[in-house]
Image (cartoon, rainbow, N blue to C red; front, side, top):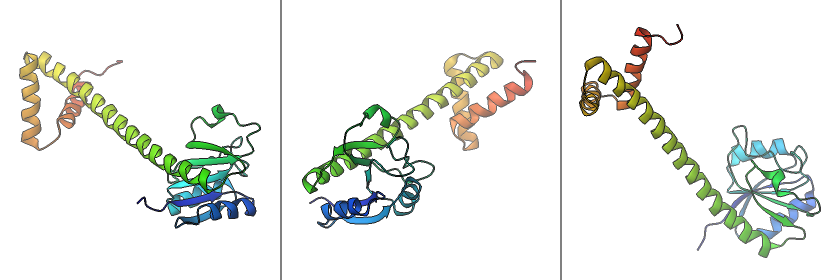
Length: 196
């Protein structure tokens, strides 16, 4: 059995909010209702919902798209609901909009869309984290390679010997290899400033 969803409703229209609340009445938790984009951001941060269901006419939104999940707000997927007349998906680029549903909507529309949005959002967050880890590893590797080049040049060592020396320095000082590399690069800059 799947766990109940915790959702935030974003709409200035009380009838819209009540309809969405009714659609998710089967054990799901409506954590709050935001009447504008700023309140949505605040509630998203404070309540950490699984998904945000928003009216595409939310006051304070950017061209019909909630500015939500920015400026420190808890990141959550957004499902937009509207009349579909002027819906242009390219307007939503850069926003966590995972679905646009055209009114009228009911539980059979909303629940699968919300569940899928939560799953896809989690996958996307995992990819972002993996990308950041890889970006950091590449950056660190470049620093280590530069430091290794300095050791090779200054101590007249081959590449393997220079790398072993870096490793030995890291072990001896109980520091990470990249920290030793940064120290070497800083010392190199102090001894041979660039741009002077």
